[in-house]
Image (cartoon, rainbow, N blue to C red; front, side, top):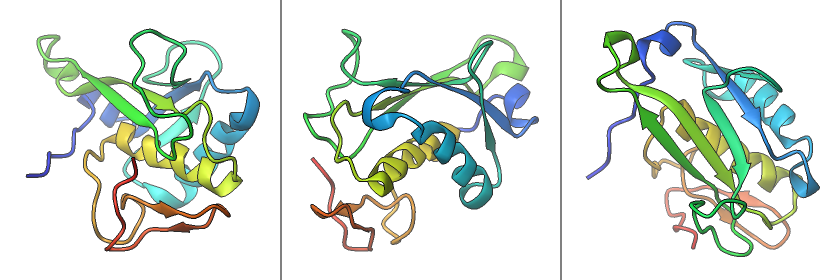
Length: 161
């Protein structure tokens, strides 16, 4: 049974903008946040968009997995990330729903630029509210990625490990 999508709290949903701060500007991930935000806002999801910030508050924070003791284990060379969302129940009607999200990216992913963008934007879609992977052959489909960095997302794609 699939999980329902998780809407953001009305306070954030009404602005249609999520502030995102990336703590990934090193190694293979350098510059990927800026590219991902630009592509995501222009092409992928029209219900919510992202504003990349470097200081001040942010609803979405992006980190490299493995730097904290409670980080998810993504495998040595994962081609996926993990997104966790915090809910604001009990904080008033305007804060009922998602109030924060953390995206964790693999520390040593396949280094092809298109794979890095796909991982980052896929997790941005989860943070924006899309909960489940779809089996429809489009963006939220679990991808198959070959050694050359080619991405194929089809109705028969298999779950990555």
